[in-house]
Length: 252
Image 1 (cartoon, rainbow, N blue to C red):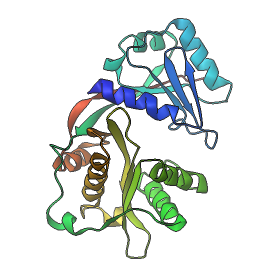
Image 2: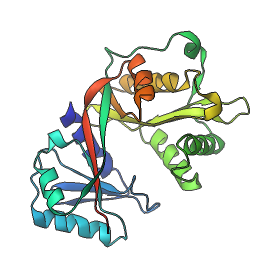
Image 3: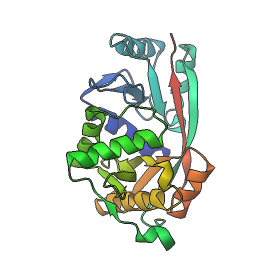
């Protein structure tokens, strides 16, 4: 499965507005933001980059004033990590990812089953989702017209954005899923506002997104989790361990 996930990562970065191929790497640059979580690189499965390839990769980031950063599944390209370490890249995180297939998907039952999961239809919806997810993730990014536009681009580009509406008409919680590539799709940004947690929103949105992608032909959907609590939520709707992904960056 890690090869599917890594192949997806390559294809997904090539969708970025200013994607580049450097040696055995693909870099996804987006001129609308300097966020290192959007502007990063990943190796092609099986890549065996040289020290010069990594030097060129670093230069591609530096010339844009960005931090050199990569996300990848190490098992899909075993030769990559050693050459990055030689260049001084350090570990940001190692995340396990979970995978759901049509055969493992479990639609929520109980109180979460009664939730109405919606697709955004207006600019106000996208803005509300962006604002709610920003708050749900502790302000890791500031809500903005640009980030709301990226959500719309996801929805209109073959992916999906889904949310549960709050009583005031805003967003109580939501998530997004990229357009499928290489048979799989990444589900991300699952967040619920603190006032609405414990009501089954994350499970309902996650299951709906997975079901949507399977309806579009994806063989699997994968995601990363941030703690044991969220892992249990995802496992309840059919996600199972798939492998690990490594996050590395170069300081200075």
